[in-house]
Image 1 (cartoon, rainbow, N blue to C red):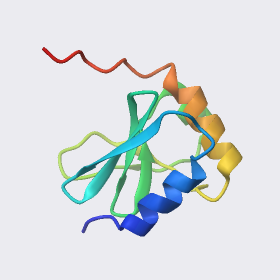
Image 2 (image 1 turned 180 degrees about the vertical axis):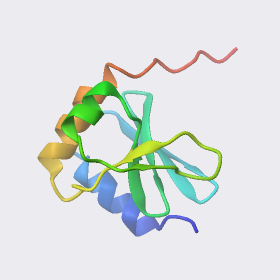
Image 3 (image 1 turned 90 degrees about the vertical axis):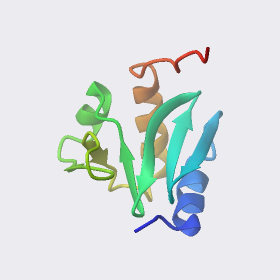
Length: 104
């Protein structure tokens, strides 16, 4: 099952106060970038983020879910209606994520 454009637009609206939010469509799903770094994605209409130390601290009871078969587990973000929480979550995570790899 792929994710709906409506769900993507809702998540992007929730993150609209952050600079440098972007996404890339990939096989019916969406990878979410913040400041050029992959922060997570939308898979089967679920917002999943990478399990960084700060994300685990901010969401201690979050479920681990796989975005697709064979992928590493990610954290399910349940509180998608809370813009302030989402902004704090992404801001806390971004420094823990690796910089994008340089293209040759």
